[in-house]
Image 1 (spheres, rainbow, N blue to C red):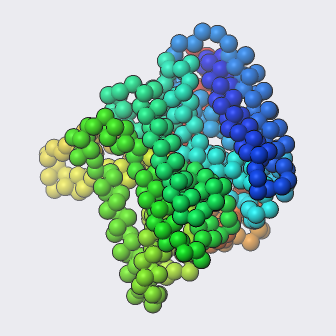
Image 2: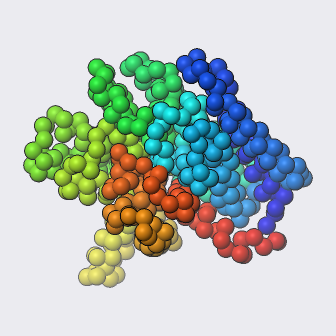
Image 3: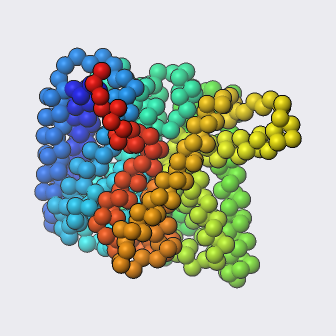
Amino acid sequence: MNFRLLAKVLGLLLTLESLAMVVCGCFAILDPVEATTSAVAPLMTAGGLTFMAGVILVICGMGKHTKIPRREGVVIVGLGWLLCAGFGAIPFVLSEPGLTLEAAVFESVSGFTTTGSTVIDDLQAWPRGVLLWRSVTQWLGGLGILVLFVAILSAVSGGAKSLFRNESSFNSGESASARIKDTALSLWKVYVVLTVICLLGLRGLGMSWFDAVNHAFTCLATGGFSTYDDSIAHFSDWDTSLWIEIWLEIFMVLGSVSFLIYAVAMRRNWGRLKREEEAKWYLGILAVAVIGVCFVGLVAGGQDSGATLRGAVFTVISCMSTTGYATTDYELWPVGAHFILLGLMLIGGCAGSTSGGMKVSRLLLVVRAAFHEIVRAFRPNQIFRMQVNGNPIDDAARAQTVMFVALFALMAMGSMVVVAILESGNGGNFETMVAAVLATFGNIGPGFGEVGPTDTFSHLRPGTHAFLALLMVLGRLELYAVLVLFVPAAWKKY
């Protein structure tokens, strides 16, 4: 293991994070609405500490490094997310009303992984500068802080492919047609442009600049942090509330389809767009889910058709995109709708998007692999050619996908046992324990029971907060980039 290389790259990454903290601190100084400057000291102190740590690491890693090998790339991704989340927790500890260390780490990790789960019960009690930092963590984590790192820092250009492949869920075969660094830069251009368009639309619909910026950041990132405890339901009494919901729905969908589609469209590769299957299946599942939830609501719940359709569309998109915005308490819906929403949360968005979950492409591959095995039961000699998005899938890729799904399921079940043990005597019920694990491991945000859309995770114990924070990073990095940190062989010198 090249420890000097690790120190240099991680140090540069921390200096980048410190800049974002300082920008939020400057906003707190210039904020015309909030008279107090209680957010300035926490943000500037956190920015200074993060910058110093970054500089020290860069100095320790000084030397000529022309390339980042695969092993170092995997370790950098895992450690990079953990370090950024750790230092990102400092403002939540130093600010008033303040969080405990475990709760602050939970909140920071939830931001950077775009999970959207929160331990803050009263957002209005927090300084606006800290709330902005909270939203910025989701925006940075949306497309991936290391993808941004690859895009703007030429110092890692020699190992860009290694970082890009391990941090994102893009198909390496599809991104190989262009230089990884150029692809990462193109994706961030699209991300910024869509964020600005979303922001201006929300401002035009009546939100303040502060609310528009925060919700645009967390909408494109499909993270779901809001500046209000009741989330998007806060705007339900506005004349423009329906249009605000529609506008957010559009950008939640845009954030949860593969950003590689936008890069392909920019290159005018229309043939590749025609072969796109995952996005079509994603939109199809959304449509079927809306119909299913509406049917359950109208038949079993006896609800008004217009209100049911409006609530179903927003909630279905919010759940499957793993954004976690709420306009209604879906726990009051019939139980049939709960199962539909739970399935959507587990599936998530498309590979290469800002969404969590297991991804639609994996669902497609597993379903097709299962169908082939069923056919082979009575036609053992038949040869199949499996494709997803026009790309051939070999036996190794299929086995890897099945292994990921199996490992995801096993780790989720084991984590439920761990959380249940940690919460022993704390009054938690079965539904809450299961939902807490799935909501964090799948980077979903809200769940069911005592961690539903109108609740927070604040009532859980500190040890549970720390464990669930680890689950969020595992889910965001799709297991392997974090699990490799616990393998002794990964740390051996060459």
